[in-house]
Image 1 (cartoon, rainbow, N blue to C red):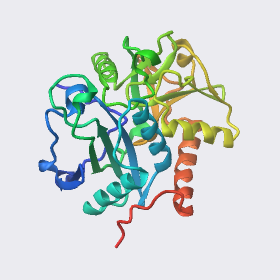
Image 2: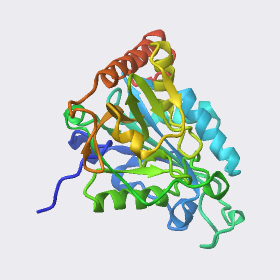
Image 3: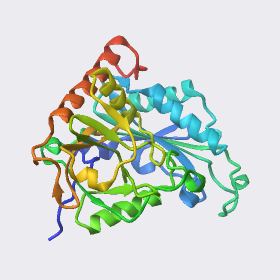
Image 4: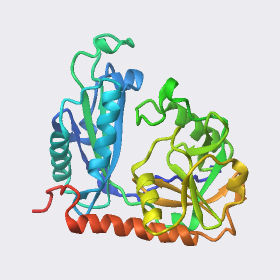
Length: 318
């Protein structure tokens, strides 16, 4: 019998996703017709960047922050997207309209260096311009995660140094995280808890990681992890709510003494952690008091921005 695994990206099954329409280089086509070349640099080499966004009540949540990260990452690797922010927003809106989507939608926006003339590494061989793909799915986080929580296992795969492959780049080259995920699965856990090159607790293979100790919220320094948009918003909310929050080095031992632990990401928001290396976090009651407080504050923050019109509208309403 195969044991069912839980992940922070578990979503309610939605049959409408079988018939979604996908944006590929300016065309919006049925799912089964959405294709890129086997010569594409993203397929051949993982040479590309991506963002995960949420569409909530007709608005793109924290759009500017996601675009900041995407354009900075692409600039760092000399990848010309071929569109400005307004152009990408138009493409997102067109894809949402084609799918008649307004809420509980997850977006995967991908940009690669494009199709290569030959199947080799050098970037100059990508001569057709970038490949831009937008996948929107009806995607509502699975109910029960807040009560069940995520099981983590510390894995031997570590987050890399900035001068090897900077972990702050949200690149298509995710093998480091895939290996960590496989190691966690082999240990009987849902996700891998990854350490930094110095042995301090850093992140999971998919999300940013926080613990709560004696009323304080701790997360890593951010030097070796994806500086997530949700991560930044949670740190901001802690400060606004006068919850002591620290970006610091801490060890696995200090995680074992934590009263609460949770993960952050654009898809699930804040997801509680049930156990680390087979040991229950805190007293085992999920979600913890501070986690609940921050979950509520995060949802309120998004609603407030939507009500004030701070996020771009998808323009899908008829």
